[in-house]
Length: 194
Image 1 (cartoon, helix red, strand yellow):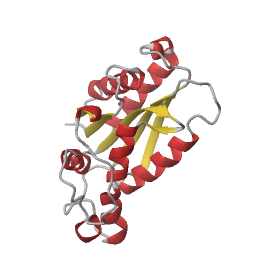
Image 2 (spheres, rainbow, N blue to C red):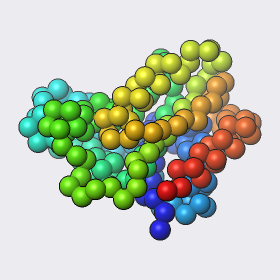
Image 3 (cartoon, helix red, strand yellow):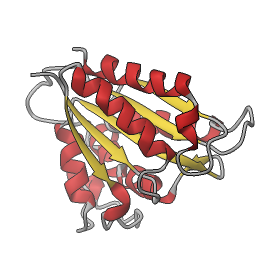
Image 4 (spheres, rainbow, N blue to C red):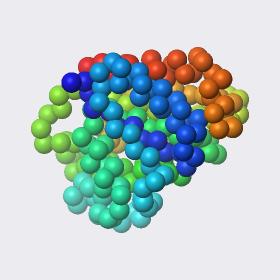
């Protein structure tokens, strides 16, 4: 069996451009033998981080909501993919809530100096992010890139790639960008490799 991929669809707009690209990535990964679990983050109840630092003692988030469900899947996955539209040069609020709550992973790694899991990983943890913005601005993804770099580091992912689409604002507009759709499919196949 191929790697276990967790695909986080974070857009509040179901079936929007970032999810279309995520689905194309999933198709590539599935056809290459990966097992993919897709979560619609906007349908989950995930509050923002309250900076209680409870995770500094145990390495897990102590706030009881749907993040516990997501965190377990992040921990168990061999690959993590996050798809988000770009809002004000960063991830959408639903993605940012997940990222901020991953402070608990950061605490586990950097405060407690603990491994992600007790047993060694069978596969190298890798990741990817899918991002869609409505403008053509050259710096459109700069803020997001920095956020994703530290997100992946916190969740013990050392190698990640991205799929980015400019000028796709209206729902379904990304379907006109065959090159980006092909890139998403290719990234999925790459994530399915050992």
